[in-house]
Structures are given as C-alpha cells and as structure tokens.
Length: 308
Image (tube, rainbow, N blue to C red; front, side):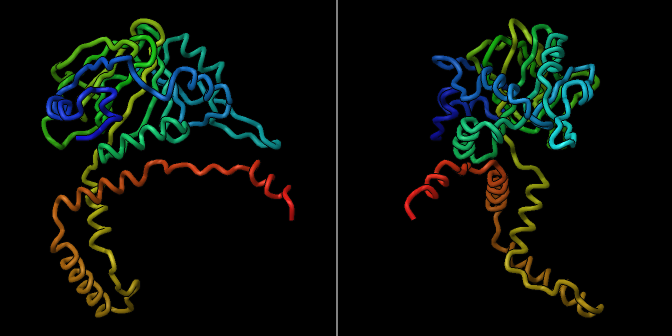
C-alpha cells in the first residue's frame, strides 16, 4: 500500500492496515512529531477576521449545552443585520469558563489543509474531512459518543486524556451520543503534542483536556453506508434510460414501468458488488472541496492597463 501521507502519522501503512484499521485503536509517535498544515496560529487568524460563520464554528460542553447566541454575534452591512458570526470576546470568555471550541470542515476554508486531505483521500480512496477542537485543561467538550468515520487525532498543542470503548456488535448502530452503560473500555491514553491517536469507525470514545490548552485536529475518514450504495445503484441502473416522464393513461404508465424494469435488469446484470462500492466511494470523493482556482484581479487589471 503506497500511502506516504498516511505514513507520516502511523508509520508503515501496510502494518497499520493489518494491525489497526477497523480492528483496534492505537497511539503513534511519529519521528519529529505531527506534521500538520493547520496550527493554533491558524485558529487565531480565522477568529481574528471576525467573519468566521456558523456552522464552521461552535462552542460546546459535554453536559451543559450552549446556545448559539452565547458565542455568535450579528454583523451590520448597509443597515441590515446578519447573524451567525464568531464573536472573539464571547469565545474567549467561554474558553476561560471551560467550554470547548469546535471548528468544522477546515478543509473547506483552509487551503493547505484541503490540499493535504486531497492527497490522503486519494491514497485511501475515501473522503476525509478535518475538524479542530480547542479544549481547556480539566474539561470535556463532547460526551461519550460514536463517530460514523475512522478518526486520526493529531495532537497539536497541550495534552488530552482519551478513553476508547468497544465498537458496535454489528452494522445496525447509530452515531452520536452513547447513553446508559458504557461499552467495555479498550484503550486509555494521554495524547501529548506531536502524537497521533487512531480510533476505528464506531468505537465509542470521550476525552478530557489534560495539561495546557489542548488543540487537536481530527481527520475523519468517511465510509459509505446503505444510503450511499442505494443512490449509486439508482445512478448506475438509470444510466441512459429513456422513458416518458409523465405517461398520459393507465396503459402508458404500465408500459413505462415495464420498460423501466427491463432497463434496470439489463443495467445491473453484470454489475458486481465491487463495482457498486467503487462507484459509491467515488461519489463521496467527488463531494470533497475541489481545488481552488482563485481569481487574480491584479492580473485582470494588468491586462486592462496594457497596450490596446
């Protein structure tokens, strides 16, 4: 398995796949520490603009939910007010009070992170997204929960204590908060700056800030689910289908249904499970942020300023 991006965090990708992938959590200590294009200074820069909007920013506590007005503020533009922007003063006060700052989908608005995840997604053939968590010491931002993704936790600053519990017994499970008796614990570790934690998809987990201001980047590796497979099956079976859109009478409706079934049967006759999975994963990958082609008004202006 050739995966140089993954290798910088977990070592030999083949060994990682054999020993850990979808099997058990693990802590990794890369030589030279974590290599990340996103750092605490980038958090500062994003907040300093005053224009980071919801839902890219949220403040959260494990057992004491916060309202959006607790950390967001409106902005006035041409005598109209628009809500939902990160408020630095409110966020700082909440951090001092033990809340966690969550920054969502960094890959959508931070170019170097988007480029890194594009490489990792290509290596794994799975969509990868990025989230940043900033947690004060001794506090917990999210209760025990399961993620619908494999997760690589890159500890960027401070430290955080993790408890990882067993994964679901079968494929009939829900992501999100885990209530009631916790599943059996399978790993307990304190992650320090420069270290990496891998959590398999569906394994319940929770974390508490340890020493210093804990900052970590969560790379969520998305897998397809039943809905993705069904939508791909629809796409593949409907390809090149030519049937009347609005049949006018009962006979025409039955004729359209007959033609549709015949087309679908022919379309899927040679379709393999591997083909269906590949198509669904490609659709997930296609939904990731595309490489940017930023305009250059400087270049446009230079062109207009040149000789006619």
